[in-house]
Image (tube, rainbow, N blue to C red; front, side, top):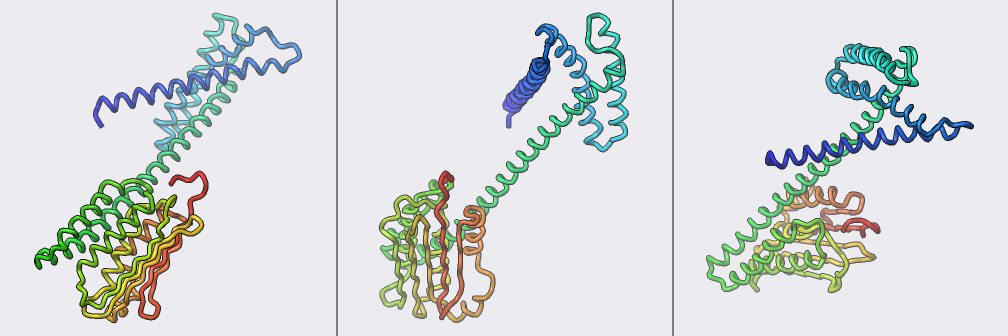
Length: 348
């Protein structure tokens, strides 16, 4: 932040503070003036205004002196100094005001009346200041928490993208070495995926159809790795009507990539099945793949980076509005995800 921007911000904060204090004192004055209306024979308006102004003149200096003492003593743990200095301020200002009040017909006179009056208003002002401090701290904590969650989401995305790109570029490199014409089509598909990841995935939600389109491109890229002689079956079933549904970008793509990474071997019969549809506003996604023997031996261990990242992103983006299940059954590794429809009025 530049110095000029910092000064502009400081001036804006100072102006807001002045206006807030002016509004509070104006409300205090109005309350003092209007409170006399409840009496059977209220004094004249001029007398009430003079009384209110005198009370403000009596209490405002000690109130702001106490604000300084709170910052300089109380918040630094110097409690005895705080109490002693506050007492000195109140008694000293009461004595000064008592002398000054002889210059005009002030309704306040004598330390016995002045000190308690000042003390009450000082404590009231301190309570208002404390509420303001608590409110600002709560707002700062919420802002820091939001920034922390956003930073974590950005880190998770940064982990997903290189992981996905590394595998895809390896596939295209293999095709290029074989001088396979399909490499050009693969590069075109990858360019679309990159555009989606870089330019369209920086929003909170995208149309589900866009995510589905990237799944189709990813499947086409994966199919380039195989020949007609390989015993590999790929089934992609996407509901043709996904209109109206929205989803966090790059949430399903890693699950599909994970199914191909762990479920396909050219040396053994393999399959990948992906299904995507909507039901009563909810998004339903299923990915199944072959669980090969070597993979089955570690199936009970913690999931890889792809599933870990998706699971954490779901916790942050869909708290209480998703179910994610994955595991082995009958030689098949299955991932089932359900995203509930957002409540009315929620951000999409």
